[in-house]
Image 1 (tube, rainbow, N blue to C red):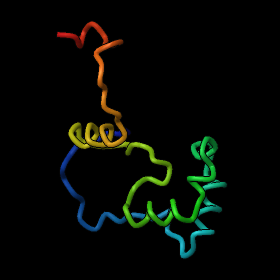
Image 2: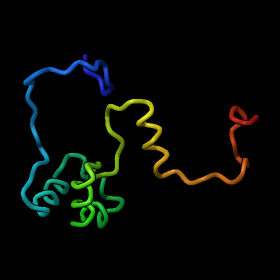
Image 3: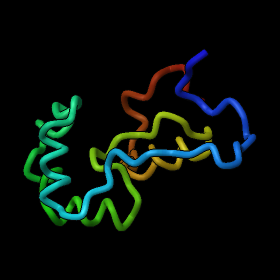
Length: 101
């Protein structure tokens, strides 16, 4: 059964892995991002996602090149990632009734 969620904490020794995003130059990353099957992800803000500065920063931070959430995560990590870009709400206006006190 295939799933995009964490289903176990067990680790397989010497299971191997591959790196489809390991390149020696920024221009190689840009080429892959343009040719990637999900190239539409950077169409909205192409200049930002394809900029050498964004690519280098993503590599150094270990963050997603497309600023997308990971496919598998813990609930706590998911909430932390969502809160990272959240703007504070200073009013209760338009708050769903289910959340009101």
